[in-house]
Image (cartoon, rainbow, N blue to C red; front, side, top):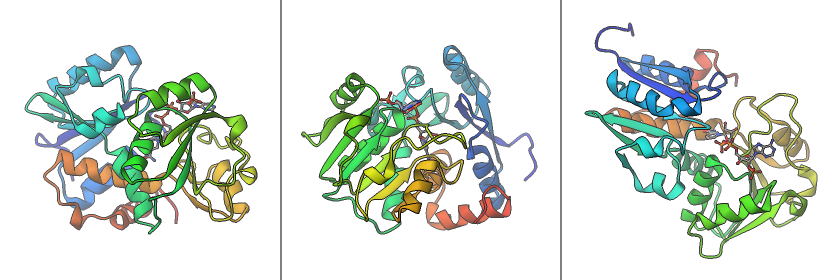
Length: 284
Ligand code: NAP
């Protein structure tokens, strides 16, 4: 698809953005789907976020994704925020409808779908969530909607964990901890939502052999690198592992539905995996 005067513009706002697969994934998808659109990535400083959003409006971008550290910072500059994004307190997808900016959160859907699509169950399960950032909020709200039994939130700072709990309506299902309490056998899932693992030489955020049991699922939201030390050590100790690629794909498909009148029944996770492999973005 050639860029012309009718090309619809989209982008990612974040900092850093250079490691993101979103531009590659969306541009490859547009090309395969014959959608005349182009997706770029802009590294934006915190204090420039309002100007960046005004710029998108002025240049008729049809929308954008927002990644760290701006998922919360964009919210005051939006005209409408949907219920899920309000509950999570973070926006990762914006749609520009006739000059009005609408905020959504597709991370929650992406995360839950990546688990359900593997036929894993969440109902009545005990989950450890590592980290208290925007991604953790989307994960935790999604898990509560799926009726898990209990979620243990881990932070480097107990005050941060406490304030994370205070922001969420959880019916007593959440508890706050520091990493010294991580050795516990009961977790059915341990989910890393921290950025520890994004650099190849990062150690695992926890000692995986001391947490969980044989059937514990270790999930890392990071997808680049494909296997973090956390996931490698879990795999080597015989546990099931999931990286963040499917979450990225499912949140991306949900964003396409919001930006375009798009029927995702005809565009599946496997279709996106195919384009990512064909474009040498991922290896099998
Ligand atoms: P974030 O706000 O920067 O960090 C999340 C939390 O990690 C922080 O609140 C902090 O919690 C903890 N943390 C930060 N630095 C740490 C360190 N040096 N050591 C230990 N803990 C640390 O990031 P985010 O926006 O929530 O995103 C988190 C990760 O999820 C990123 O790697 C991002 O790429 C990934 N992600 C993936 C997808 C996907 O589609 N696969 C979607 C969204 C995000 P405490 O201060 O409480 O310890």
